[in-house]
Image 1: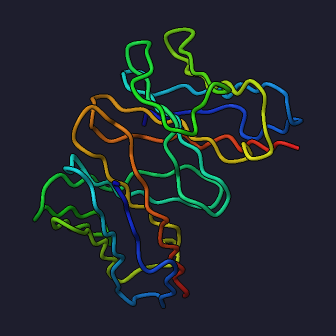
Image 2 (image 1 turned 45 degrees about the horizontal axis):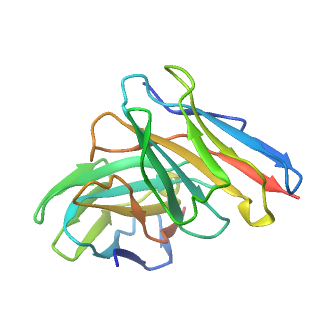
Length: 111
Length: 113
């Protein structure tokens, strides 16, 4: 069964304290891995798509990496406005377009 | 920047009533999806839709649920007879190409009393 597990569930950082979020997945052939940001009561906001092991994408203080079993979202020198829940989702090869989501990591960055 | 829109933002209904949730996907997108998120839980896939047909549906998407693209811009999710356990945030998403990034709307919070 295709599955996504994110860790930790919650993370508290001081402003400027860099860290990484983990997304482990098992899927019957990966088409793509997606990172989203979700603020309370809002819809997921797209951050990155990764398609193959070794691929990396960067945007401001965020960098996403992908291996054959997991993905990391690295946050460098976070600011309070980076506080949100970060969701990882995978899409399997084949005729399905559905995304399978992890539980998310809720990040709180304190000034 | 194009975005997915959803109405209403919040819908309160009595158990057993029918509700229709509406979505306007990004205009040049061809693939449409509904997901739901029960409070504190994962985002779950409900259904995908392409070329006026359901492509795939989950176990959650039973006979009480239906989707429709009534015109060139709207995409709707209907729940015929709501249950308490249907209370959740419902998100519409769309993508331009199959397998491409899915962009999500802001969601409709459905509360069933």
